[in-house]
Structures are given as C-alpha cells and as structure tokens.
Amino acid sequence: MPLTVSRENRREFTVIAIIGEVDLNGVPRLGENIEEAFHRKAPQLIFDLSRMNFIDSSGLRVLVRAGAKAAECGGTCALCCLCPTPRRILNLTGIDAAFDIYPSVDAAMAGGPMESRASLSLS
Image 1 (cartoon, helix red, strand yellow):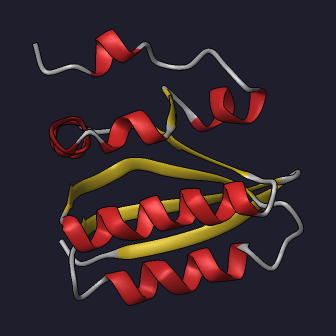
Image 2 (cartoon, one colour):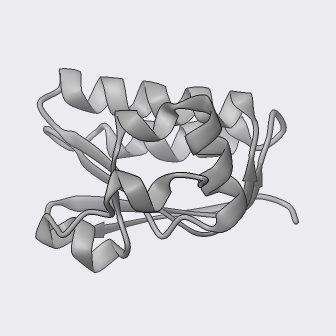
Image 3 (cartoon, helix red, strand yellow):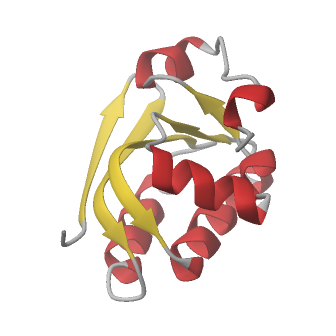
C-alpha cells in the first residue's frame, strides 16, 4: 500500500496520521509533514499509526529524530494505535522505549493512560 500522510491541528496538538508502508520512498513525504508541525511553538506531536502496516529503518529514523527535535523545542512526541507489525518492529529495535505510546489519539491528547510496556512486549 502506498504511503499517505495527513496532518491535523487539534487544540495544541498536531496529529500526523500515517497510512500504508513507511519506506525509503515515503520518508520525504513523512518528513515534510513533520517539518510543518515544527512551525508551531513547542510542538505536541501525536503519530496515529492505526493504519500504518509497515515501517523500515529509514522511517524509524524519522520518528526518532522527530521525538528528539520535539524534546529540544520543549514539546512532546507520542505514538498511538500501533498495529501488530509496526508494534513488533518498534519492540524488536527497542525504539518503543523512546516514546510514550497510547491506545488512541484521544488518550494521547488527554495525557493517559498509556499502554503498559508489558502489553508492548512480544512474549
């Protein structure tokens, strides 16, 4: 499935929905949407991954950089609605530990409850 990225401002949050597969070909499109979000002071990013079915190392790098840049700017970066394959990839690489992960966009906007690390494990 080709990559589609949408960005929506909801209150003080920027929700970036990623649909399809994030690979080297789609990373520029994702990066453009993330950069636009950084035009807001102290960006509060939420990545809606409910319809993302794959992410490769180039996509992971973009997410990690977005999280680091948001923190540098005094903002936040959260992931929500992980599907099984991306969840497994994030878990195997250990990148899931770098993010707050929520079951829904609404939960991320409300600040909790987060998914427990135990629910994210592969066991």
